[in-house]
Image (tube, rainbow, N blue to C red; front, side, top):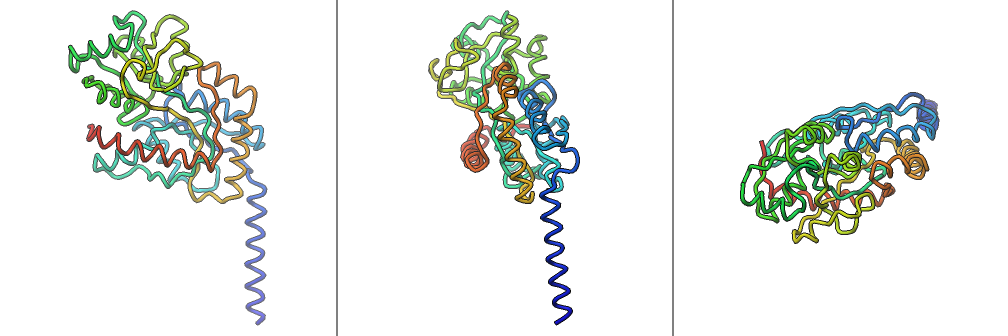
Length: 322
């Protein structure tokens, strides 16, 4: 009886210690992995969000860019990280594509979708079809007709196979009956640099990544993969308006390892919500060309699952890409 009482007391003490530790969380810096190089949408969103979350949590939230495999490397690192809340990832919509792409390629999965828990969505923009301002294409129709005349001659850059810049171009190719040459980079930033330098002809990118170059007169946006007018680029028509059934949204959101303790997850959820409502964060992201479209954890989880189901079918149609 005495032994049972001692054991019970020990368990209660351990439980109390764990709860106290979680209530005191965080006690050190938090790493926010950005699975792409600087210059792309994920990085543009992550930096003001990390700064605002640092203020809310009372500890630094430090950005680490871990690029590669269309974002899969950084997402996989987060999925395998210790589930203590000290490693989070600011991911893009390629997160829902990569597990299925791994299956199509017959390779070991970098992560499973269920390994990561959605905490907050910050943005959700259709990608835009961008070319250099000195290109011969003035409209989407010009671009598509040229691609039909010269199969494979037009090349476009992306953030990696099956990433958020590759998938929408494949959707357009399938619907318009054209063939282009895909040139993968490690992220949107390097791809846009290559576009500006003349190494590639086009990109499908989030508006925030190219807006400054549009304003500078270096890049022309021919159209977008959305269904309504873009606030940052109101003159850009949708691909649907041009006669092509091609829709795609590039969203950004915060994820944590699935088994992160609930009290810690809720602290991160509250900090992310505060960041999304922060006037400075909203101003920075809006000025970059991507308005904040916040979605809280439960609704974001449903959104991710629905997006995953749709993207699985797209990846199957794309097939194996080496």
